[in-house]
Length: 365
Length: 98
Ligand SMILES: Nc1ncnc2c1ncn2[C@@H]1O[C@H](COP(=O)(O)OP(=O)(O)OP(=O)(O)O)[C@@H](O)[C@H]1O
Ligand SMILES: [Mg+2]
Image (cartoon, rainbow over all chains, first blue to last red; front, side, top):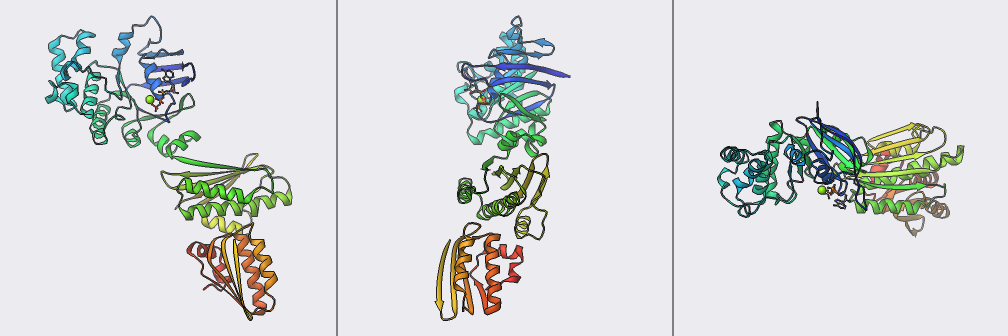
């Protein structure tokens, strides 16, 4: 059963609307990694969930209770949703155990003795029992973040929201914080984690939200999002794709200019010389030697659009060419020298027709 | 593309550099057409050539055909990238590559 239901959530700021219409359900035990480019509303989503920000419209329901309803008791909501920030936000005038105890004692009215006992248990769980009497300033960043996590758990929340919990940490301290989050995931804690740690996101979560274009642009398992993202922007983000598009509107297009754009693209993205040469050859052989001469011979195939993609993560490249006219498979004449060159150099070639011709070539090292 | 011709009696050496593609291949074709008369030994030095496409290959093949009738042609100095193209197209068997 879904524990949190987000319906038509919208957040407008004067100059920007980071969340346009977010609809999603979160189940008990879900560990959700939230990824996406900067400024796509990841923090805004978390802040709207726990009501640090008031959504412009839409509803958030948790355990059947509509927390976006103005009549809803806000401190009750905060109890259900723990939050861990990038910047720890510990009380610097309280020592560590007091930091962990303060909310249970003040908000839940837990007896001090019990809160202390539970607090020490939690500090043990995050490996910081011996720092109980220290003050936040005496702790490293990684230790402070582990205290912040213990403090969030102390409220027995339904879900913990993490906003880039390791971004402010020295790289040597990232591991200790991630391992605490990992163990919470094993214990079945429901969590939503905004993170740039892709390997961690893949390992720890059962769902990944890729945010873009004003909402959750793609929602899937880590395998779906990291290995087989289906939507364009997700692919560009995950595979760190760089794109070059060339529009060919006439048979007398600027060939030299196009080649120099491809070469510039190769230099900008440090594409290996041989792969770049293959891309140039594919462009020349398929476009000028094949598709354009067919266009001259048997009627309009133009305009054509050529998109070259290079993936920095797996060092592969692809070229896709779309053009109009009737179905024309440029690979049909197998004896043709141009076709031979392209077929031999590309790892994969394909042609399909859906009212437009689509040719795709893949290159690997 | 750069073309450098050296004539030594009936032996013509043509150095080709840069890119031999759709745009530049016709230039080389014209250059060869104009200078092969009476030549019995043609050497194409492609050590400075970086790129060749099918358009360039066709020019080499047509020069080879001409030279078959009147003498011989050799191609020298192909770099690894160019050799790969000769390989995948079967031009290694059509041209005399050294
Ligand atoms: N309080 C605010 N007032 C006005 N605009 C805001 C406010 N908070 C966020 N924004 C804007 O909303 C957009 C989304 O911001 P948000 O912080 O949610 O992005 P993010 O995905 O968390 O980015 P990052 O990865 O950089 O943390 C940005 O354009 C941001 O400038
Ligand atoms: Mg953020």
